[in-house]
Length: 75
Image 1 (cartoon, rainbow, N blue to C red):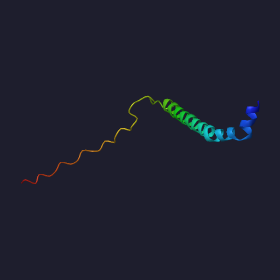
Image 2 (cartoon, rainbow, N blue to C red):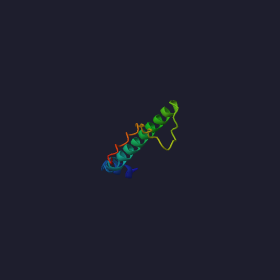
Image 3 (spheres, rainbow, N blue to C red):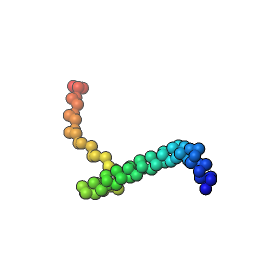
Image 4 (cartoon, rainbow, N blue to C red):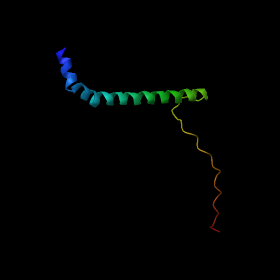
């Protein structure tokens, strides 16, 4: 157990945890939060009768009235 006292006493373990452990935990937490947000969005779409697996989620373009025909200036 002397090796364990050596690791903790010279702060090698704390340095390793600060450099590697904290960023790994932070990245994993952000991934989990993103997954939860996507899940909630999908559940809300299902509740509103939408298909969450639809390929085209864009809104349909608003139809504009046809333009007036150009005046014939050849006369």
